Structures are given as structure tokens and as C-alpha cells.
Length: 241
Figure 1 (cartoon, rainbow, N blue to C red):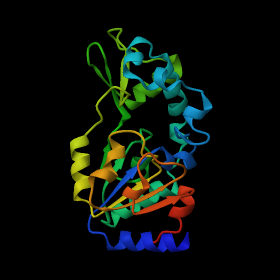
Figure 2 (figure 1 turned 90 degrees about the vertical axis):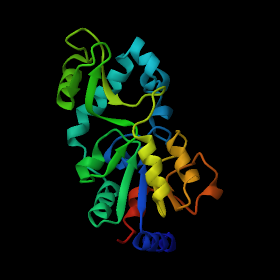
Figure 3 (figure 1 turned 120 degrees about the vertical axis):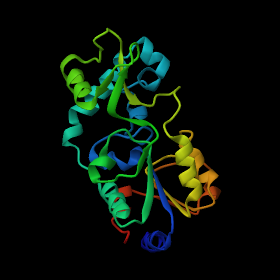
Figure 4 (figure 1 turned 180 degrees about the vertical axis):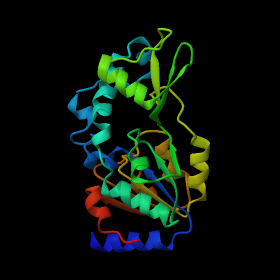
């Protein structure tokens, strides 16, 4: 691990255009379960993925997603960025990391201080009514979920947070692909690379590609230059800037 950490640190130091992609594994140390990990949402059976994160099902019965969102937002104010969140923010502040692409909707990258972020799966910062398109902010949605377990517009329509569901196009994907194409170093952190289109990024770029995550990944290992299967925060602590 020490040699890999030294090698990756050198890649980061020598890079001209570093782009990072983060997945749910970045936030597990903050207390947010990932999806496909050993203790992830899919393995726990606490939430049915198709009933919770499918757009067509949400329009029919949003209660499953509202229950998930209430649990997340009830603890969001008390969650702190992990070592990995803070490390990426520091890389950006030093003008080493040019763009951060994240699949996460928890807002911890922003809390850590990162600014140039592409939230391809959206965020809870805003929401809108599916009937009249009235806009709502984070505080309104959080308070309504905690008080009433639902998000209902003044017109009676369902309010959907602006996060990306299965069956919806992801956000800013053209910009994300352009950034990945410009990169000479792509680092993937805490993502299993099984969800499209983010899983395509390592296949799309000519950059040196490093993946640091715990568990199996969904793309061929031959398409990755360095793969580190370990606890993310522990390994990040070994990296130098």
C-alpha cells in the first residue's frame, strides 16, 4: 500500500489536468450507507431500489422515496465531510484538482469547500412541483419531510427534489465528458463503476486512470492503470499533496 500511495501521490503532483469522480463510498465514513457495499442500501433491503429511486414509480407512489429522504435529511446537518472530501477540497484550493464530478446527492463536497463540482445525479438544494413546476428550496423540503413525511405543493402536486432517478437523464453529462476528455489524470474514488453513464468515464478518456474503492467494480480491470481495493479514508491519509 505504501508504494501505491507514493506512486499515486506522484501522479497527482505531476498532473496538469486532474479530474476526480466520486461515488457513495466517499461518504460511508460520514455515516451515509452506500448502495452496493457489504452494509449498503441494496444489501440491507431497507429500501426497495425500484420503489424508492425509479421515476415512474415515484410519480405513482412517492412515499418510499420520501421515507428515504426523511432519514437522510434528518441527519444531514450533523454529518461532517470525511478525510476524502477534505482532501479533494484541498486539491482544488491548490489548483491541482480542476473538476470534481460526483454521483452523490448528500452535499458533503460543498460542505468540505469544493466549488467546481458537477453533480451528475443532482442535489437536494432545490425541488419542483411535478404539476405546476413551482420551485422549492432545501429548507422547505427538509422541514416538510420532518413534519409531514411528504412534499406536497400548494397546488396539490407532488414536489420532487432535483435529484436524478432511474429513468431520468443525468445532469450536465456533456460537460462531464468534456472534462474527462481533457484530463491527463482521472481518479475515481468510492464508486463501483456500475451505474451509467459515470461508469463510461474511464473508458472514454486517454488519461491515466486510478480507482480507489472498496469491493468489486463494474468495468474491466485492464482499462484501469492502478486499482486500489481498500478502505478509502485510510488510503487517502497516506497520500501527499
